Image 1 (cartoon, helix red, strand yellow):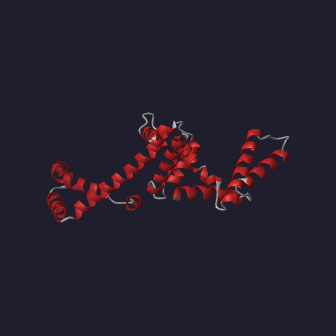
Image 2 (cartoon, rainbow, N blue to C red; image 1 turned 45 degrees about the vertical axis):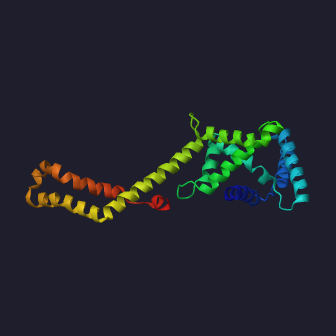
Length: 238
């Protein structure tokens, strides 16, 4: 629900910021622009027809339900379109909808998008009444979603899921390293590795210390590993 509400809210807010009412306002603006600027550009006739049809349909819906929104009804189609369209504009829109400010995928929005994808796909499958009773439409839709996620050619959904999995895995590894260092055993290992380093620095001339690398390198590497395992904002969000 959150993903749908956010999509509708963003769209409606953009229209209102430009002084346009949803659906009917868009239709009026399109027709006004077409009339006033005939010499410079002309909107395709089908766009005006589609816009008018949407306006009529929403008017009919509002006469029955005052909370009706044709944009809400179009959400399943928009969800599938964003998940399957590989154009830069659609890729950016999908990323903006699913990825949080911390760089993580919002699981509730992902589930809602997936539900919209399957609902729209199921509704467009041509089935006999017998197979429809058996739920074949939803089965076809679920297989379409699986094919999308496992497509060998790759797509934006796979990229987002892999990025999310990589961020979570990275956070888990850093957390494991940090806990290992802070454990009693980890502290004991650090002390044991520090002894050769301290002895070399105290007794071996600096010009010859390069020869002692086999003894001091493990401690140096442990310090580097500890530095690399430090958490950032993304790790804390994960």
